[in-house]
Length: 433
Image (tube, rainbow, N blue to C red; front, side, top):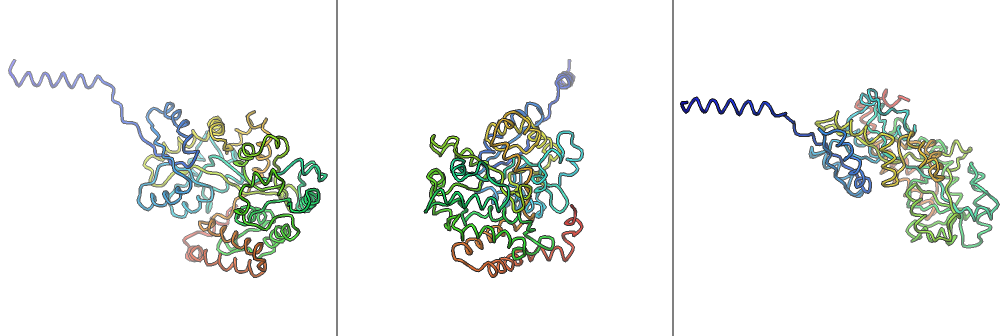
């Protein structure tokens, strides 16, 4: 056979052999960024996702909470954002305003795996910005009242009263039985969340005019401040910064104070840090409200999963969010790191129905409400903290302090007012229920 003919024959054989082999495309890689402990344990969950979806791979990048915000902003500016990321709920409005993350309404509407009704209403609402849904809750938290059951019993109470007047009376009874040098409630001035909770409970909108001006010198917030400041004036709370009480768990056990507002992470901390002698002598309760239990709202906290606009694989990214949102995966996540599930269906599992602490958190989560959804909220929250500190520690006049707070917040929100006035943020969207 001539040389040219032999070469053509071998080429045909090679082509035939190649056609007989199945062609497999390289798997699509999704990048998932997550923070803290969540970033560590999610590795376990995504391996199951990959087994269920052989054509997909998930590359997890774990980062500390302290660096996460800056890293995400830098990635957005540099065009190197991940496909999916964990965002703290209060960050969602900022990243939505930056147009860094995608609206998810069409995905939610077409999904058979999840729906808005599968989540606590207040938690879901933290992800709705200007009428669009930008995130799916991944885990939740809220604030409740930790308290000494033994001290409360000696004061004549078997539970925390449901309204402010009854709660204050219980605190006064606690102070009487504990004696001089002891307090009922630890309310540190360098933690802004309790002050915001009191405002929300008093039905303060916090911000007015579509989130462009402060409402802190309005009657609702003033009512909240009158109640909170009264706790210090009556000697029911120590007028100190949080840092001045070095070990709050130790002081809680020693009886310096008998109540403290905190979140689910502290259930484990109290269990570990209190001595065995404290077993059965402390518990948690849903927060009292000014007008009864229904008004005892608390903050809607936690983290959500979002898809960044620059993702080249948004459909696959949504598939990962649906997987991590399944009730069984939410329960595994809870078992791995202790975070409370976002899906209401997961709360029907015996692991949570038989947990008396979890039952209290479920009650509080049904009364959770979001804080104002503006990008500037975290800086505004710090201003609230500074104002509270001035009123408690420096005895600043509440009228002038809250008026100054409104002026400062108005300056913070000047750009937002301009955007609304010039039609860059549609008022119709802001008025949607």
